[in-house]
Length: 168
Image (cartoon, rainbow, N blue to C red; front, side, top):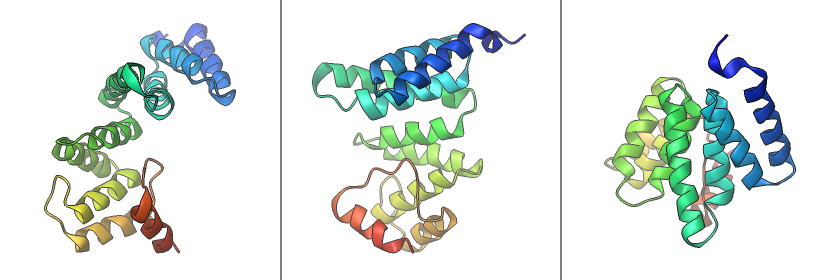
């Protein structure tokens, strides 16, 4: 069989999911990482998600290291074919100044593979002129194509209000 198809990697995923449902992100991340190292793409992807969404938000060195680990796991998952991980990777990269061009490249590749989430983020970048020349017409085209939403959006303040009003 395939390396990641045995009972141990699947057991790791079950344990990780139970830990995530129990709101124990460190335990969930550890088991997702182990599943990823055992050859399961979903383990890599979910390790990156838990690290970026739950652990990297903590202040100080611990949060910074978790963010770096999240980038690595999302990159590995994207390399083995996870389009969703590629969008998450681009979104995490876009939070750091100077990464907008790379983020747009990753979003563009994911959109070409059919990701509506990537289309939404491309629209946001066109609207704000981040990594591309600002173009509201193109932004609205992309937002309409994405059904005006992305599960990876991290909007605050007026941006969050504007997108809440634009959804019908």
